[in-house]
Structures are given as C-alpha cells and as structure tokens.
Length: 558
Ligand code: GLC
Picture 1 (cartoon, protein in one colour):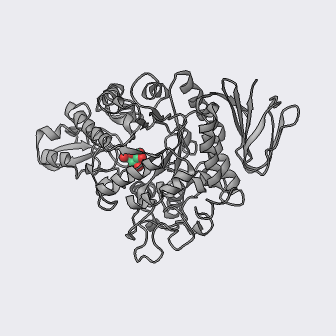
Picture 2 (cartoon, rainbow, N blue to C red):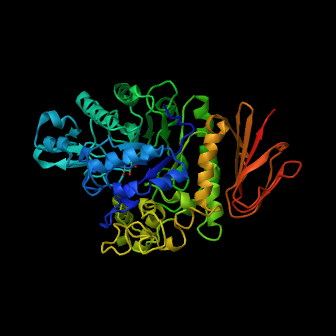
C-alpha cells in the first residue's frame, strides 16, 4: 500500500554523527539499527539517510566514489539490508540520498576521464581556459574559490560547483543519465522507498559564460533541461512504484520552477526543499556575515511558499534544519531559560504547515549549536575554507571564527546526544577513540534519555505533532491561510479542510506580546500548547501571548 506522504513525517539521520556501535568514533549503520525503537516511539514514517556510500569523505559522503557499495566505516551491505528489514518491521521506510550532480574525483568514471578516455571525459565538463590564461568562466564554487580546476596534461579545466574533489556530471550526456538510472533501480530492488536528490536543480548547465553580476549561479540553477531530465528519471525508475516518495534539494531555486518539480501531475518529484526561509540571516546570498534574522522576511517567505505551492497543486517539504544548517533553537529560539518553550514553538510552526515535515536528528530533543572555541575543532570543508577566505579579505581571526561559529554546518553535525555519559552515548564512554567531531558539553542537560519518558519534554511535543498529522486531515490536506501577516512577533495561520478548522498561534519572541486577532474562537479547543494550559483569547479575539507561547486550536464545524 502506498504510504500517504501528506500524513508522513521524515526523520533525517546523518549516520556519521548518529550512533557509533563499534567504538571507532564514527557513527554507523548498526548504530542506526540500535535506535530504531526510539524512532518508532517518535512515530516517524521514513528515515532519510545521508550518504554512507564508498567515499573519501572530503565532503562527508557527498563525494561518492561508488554508488553501489557501503563505505566500510559505516558497515556492510548485510547491515544495510538488516536496517531496511528492521525498520520495515516498525513501519519505517528508508529514503536514500542520491548525489547525482557530481561524483568524487575518486569515482571510476572520473579516474578514467583523467586517464584521457574520451568516453568518460564526456561524463564531465572539461573546457579550455580563456586566452588570457584564466579559467573558462568566473563562476565561484559553493565552497569558495573558482569553480574550475586546471588539469595540466589536457591543458583543460574541469567544473566543480562544490569541492575540487567533486567534479560535476554532464547530464546532457545520455550515457550519464542511463548510469544514474541504474543506481536508482539497484536500490529500488533492495526495498528502498524514498530518494532525496542532492542539489538536483543544478544538473542542467545553460552555457559557460562569465557572470558579470554574480557568482555564476544564474547559468546553472533551474537550467534549461532540468525538468526534462527529472521527468525522464522519474519515468525510467521510481515513477513506476507508487510507494516511493522523492524530494529534491533545490539550491537558490525559484518558486515557479518548484510548481513543476513538485507538481501533482508533472511526474518529476513528490516534493522540494527550498532554502529561502533559511537565508533570512544572510546578506542577500552572502552567508558568511553576522546579520540578525529578519522575522518579517521569514514570515513572508514561509507564507508565500505555503500559499503559492498550494495554488499550483505542488507540495513542500517543511523544515528548519538539516546537516547543512545551524540548530534552529540557537538560530531562532533561545538556548537559555526559554529553551524548551522556544524549541516546542519552532516544532509547532513547521509541523502544522501544509507540506511533509522533516525532523533532523537531535532537533526533537532541542539540541543547540556547537560550543567550539577554536577553529581546530571544526571539521567541515566549507567552514574551514571560509575561515581562511574571511581572513584573506582582512577580517581578524577572532571575527572570522565568530562568523564560522554562527553559520558553520558543523553546528548540526556534532554527535547525537543520547545520554549524559562522557560521549553522550554516541560512542561508548569507555572507548579509547574520541568521536570524529566534539560532543557538545551541554549533553549533561540536553539528551534523549532524560526526555523520552518525560511527558512535558520537547521529544514528546514532537511525538504529538507527528501523531496529530496522522489523526487530523486538516493538517495533512487542509488549505493554508496566513494570519497576523504584519505583526512584528506573531507567526499565526489557519488551516481548513472540509469541516475541520485549525488555528496555529505562535509568539516567535521571548517577550510577551499582544495580538488583536479579531478571530471568533467560539467552539475551538486548544489541542496543543507549550505552556501548561492553552491561553485563550479574550472575547473580542485579543491574545496576550507569553514568551514563545505556541498553541494549536481546533474546531470541527457542524
Ligand atoms: C548538498 C548537501 C551538502 C553537500 C552539497 C554537495 O547541499 O546537503 O551537505 O555538501 O550538497 O553535495
């Protein structure tokens, strides 16, 4: 039976940081198997596993050397098969992460290309430099620096939109597309029921020209053949199995393109991740700056994507974080005395929206950003590159570090905090081997063991949210209507479906505020709140909201 992805919740696992079963400091597949009961308790339907395929790990597995085999650091094919089977017994399906925009430079295709094999050279973008000796274009790599790498023996450059060890694949070559289809079919046969496609809106490059006004993204983002290629992939692989759900990671995409990527009838993907709402603390597209989050903008972006995607019968993935983002409670909430209230509020905001919610490991227990104080504690290639780039631009090391601390992807990559033991239960406390990345010292206070049985915990708040989506059609299928659009601290909306009506009210800040909603709350009851009691509005619809107060009110019309 096809699972209804509108009623489903996906849990994202970054296996390297989730649970280490063999004491080598790296999380692994057997570690995940050991935590399936925990995930079943949370109630999630899918586990999205970030890549565990053979890889030199220059970008933590997003540099794939072999799509068909498991990196021994993570375990074996038997472990993976057991994971799929054991998850299945608990009603949980697996979603795999397909990194198809690029491969690792150690992938056989690229090695052959570098040996001069013209069949494989055409799997990539090799181009001559400019006459003046510069690279073919001025495009910038997403991880910093020029996006072209010179290969002396060919007197040519190859394109890498990410790290130099992640050469871009040439999707215009049909042989590439056929090879990638094989990969999907291989995993479908193993019983995989979901696919996440990494930066998949970058696969179609329009032309190789200098970008006079930007970093080049306009020449490869949502490119000319991207819809055609996705439709083709759908028809040749997962589109034949109604049980499979798919999500595309869309980098700097436009909403108009997403109507098609995630359209109900376009046969491309089930849903999309877009990131505009997570750039509200950037300066334009510039991430490596310190700017306070712009709440008005955040609300505007979330509401626009909610309403427009609905209008166009397209489906969103809704989320605050993943392995590339800082922790939401540190970013938008409060790490101090209102930690619990703010973490629950953030969960409610996302989970009652129209779209499939994603929970990133540790979010459900309110994990915070790292407490790293020295650059040597960071591991992420992007963070390390930018620490250097910022100093090259003239920033003092101290200021560069501050920016990295706030924005680093490592904020989301510290080990999952299972308990208060030495390594937070991620790896055995008696292990000689330290975790590959430091554990946050606050694991003595923030950990799963202290939350699972506590009714009032963040974990149990998330558990309720997951269940509510299954129980109430209005959450899964309802229309979305923005409320309080101009209010400086309230994020509120309404959902309606047949006879069901839902009002979601959130104070996004740590200060009490008032909202003259004008809503008639007759007949509504509060079904979820982050304070002991839901706080009703006055008769004329005025709410006095406590710090980070968050409530869900429900009514069934007669
Ligand atoms: C995506 C992944 C990220 C990776 C990049 C390159 O954005 O989520 O972790 O570095 O693609 O594959």
